[in-house]
Length: 405
Image (cartoon, rainbow, N blue to C red; front, side):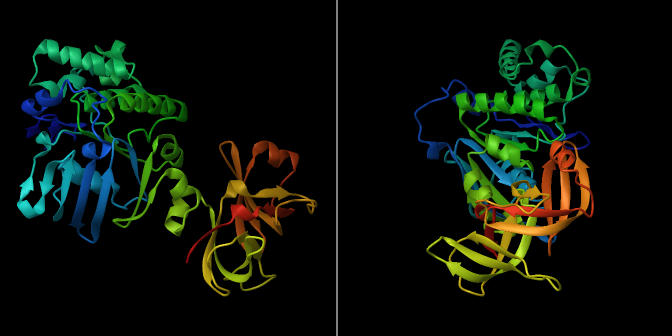
């Protein structure tokens, strides 16, 4: 077994911290949370090219103190990005620095080992030691300190995540949410310059996840370091993210605030991640600049009445191909022809299927194209919805989001 601080290789599971050296820790252990440094001077800068079989990660990022969310489908390169920053993978070319301190530079043949990078890393599987107590797990990366110092640092970290009372228990004696807090405390007790989180809360229920997110946000408000937080959850993106990096097939395809990136996506990959269940090919039929709208005909329909939607006006010529995305939750459903509405799109259709998903009902409606509509259980029951029932879909103009084809 080879040990780098508290990063363990060989048959042991990967651990949740990449430990700094004693000298580096001493140089900044007492630095105040708000030292007056410019945020850019504390930023993580990374330009990475890494080829793995048929996959290639080719990105350039800048993450200032606060939460940056690498977001994307499975296989997009999110974990590969984190592993390169932590030193678990070596980029083929590129440069990685934190606050001006270079961790990797291919041109200068500089590649600091994980133990010297001062990077905290929490993996999805947590990798806690079952034979150690909670307190001993958190102290694991502090072997260079005296026993009183280890105890003091561990107690402070445990208290930050409200689990100080669990210190003497073993990890198999505590709940899943408490284990997640232990993993976070262990990653942060070393006072890292950067924190990497790879879907750390994926297995938790919503209420537990929300409480841990609040604790993590409070900790970061006091310490202000760059945090890269990988998640597949759109709710977590909006709850935590100050900036989102959308990755697809090893490239960054969009970046900005959660609202900028996910509320009005310009690409289908992003629309799918943002929760647009209905995405269709379309063609511009008419433009109404005076009203700020245009009419788009959905294409690919081989029979029946053409389906047209009024959409917001974008810069596009007549006949231009576009993609239209509509969230299932943005569509209203009526059992009689609606009248007196401000919504501009009313489509007659028939329910093909109804499927309950927890407290939501998903209805698939054939209206020339198949659209997915989300309803509450109460709405399903009060409208007496059943398969083959005739219905009308009501879609506001600004619920139709246009994307590049």
